[in-house]
Length: 459
Image 1 (cartoon, rainbow, N blue to C red):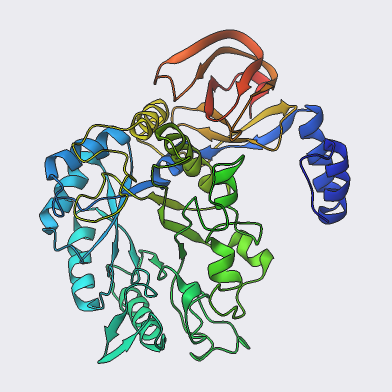
Image 2 (spheres, rainbow, N blue to C red):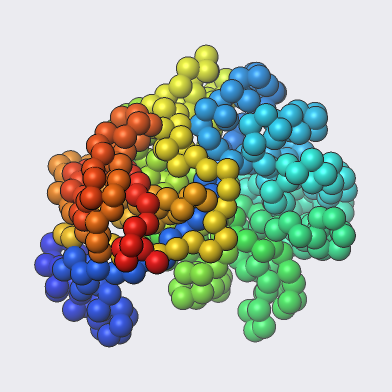
C-alpha cells in the first residue's frame, strides 16, 4: 500500500502502525497531536563537519587565493580532492590552515597509483588536513588500468575490485593512516560482473566473483544528484527524496548502488541494512537552467545538506565550488560564478554556517522537550547543540508552493529565544522572552530557533 499525502494524518498513522509497531505509533501520534517529546540533540559541530564541496584549488582556471576566500565564506569544513590534479601539497596545507578545511583524498578519475596516494596522504595527515580516503571516481565513466589489466566501463570490473581491495589494505596496514576511514568507489551499481563492490565487506553466500570477506571500504560512497531522468523537475520534498536510503529514492541513490545495483541488479544489502549503512556523498547538486532557477538551486543545496545529515549521511559534498570554465555544456553548478561572484546558494549557506558557527564539539549532547504541531510531510526538523550549551532547532520546509503555519511547543518557558531565517541574513529576525512556544511560517527553506536550556524544559 502507498502512504499518500491525500490521506488524513491518522489514516497514515494507522498504516504506519501495522508497519512499525505500537511504540513507533505512539511517537507518531505524539508528533501529530503536539505532545511533548524528549529529543536527543546532535552536536552542532557534527553537522558543520558534514558540509563539503569540490574545487580544483588552483588549476583548471581556479585561483588559489579565491579558493581560500570562498571556502571561508561558505563555512564548508571539507573538500573532495586527491592526486589527480597535481596541486602542490603545500597549497592543501595552507588551505587547511587558513580556512580550516580537511580533505577526502582519492585516486580520481582513472587513477590507480596507490603508492602516490598513500605517500601524499601521510603529508596531509601530518598537517592535520586529512579526512578520509576514496577509491576511484566513477569507473563506469573513467576506466582504470591496474596491474597491467584494464577494467571498468563495459569491461570486467575485477581490476577495479582488486584496486579498491588493495587500497583498503594499504591504508589499514599503515601505522599512521589506519585510523582514517576508506570510502568506496563511486557508481558501484554499474559493475558489469558481480565483483561485490556493492558491499563494504563481501558477506558469506553473496555469490560474488571476489571471495567472501573481501574488504573494500568503511563507508559507501554515492553520487545522488538531485535531478535524474526519473525525477527531472522541481517537486515537494525533492532533496528529502534524493537522500532517501531506500527504494523510494527516485534518483541514483544508495538503494540503486548498494541495495539493488542498477546495471545488473545483483544482490546487495537489504532495505533494513541500508538504513544504518555508513555512507557519504562525494557528489550531489544541480545545474541551473530551465525550471531550476538560481533561487531553486540555492534552496535545493541548503535543504540537501540538512536532509543528508538528518537521514544518516556522515559527509556531503556538493558539486561545485565555482563553475567549470574548461568544460563545455551547461556548467552552472557552482556556489560561485566564473568571476567568483557569489550565487544565492553561497549567500544562503554562508548565513546558515554563520548562525551555527562553533569551533567545538559536544561530547554528550543534551535533550530538549519539544513538539511541532501540525507538521506536514514537507516539514522536517533536527535538534543541534553548540559547545556553549545553546540548542539550535532547525525546522525546514520543502514545499514548492504555499506555506504551513506550525507551532514549536516547548515544555516550559525559555528566557531568551531567537529566530533566524538563513535566506534573509545571519541576524535574528525575531527575539522572544519567556517563550513556551514559537510560531513559524514554513514554506521552502529553513528556519532556526536558538534557545538555552532552562529549568525542566531541557535535561
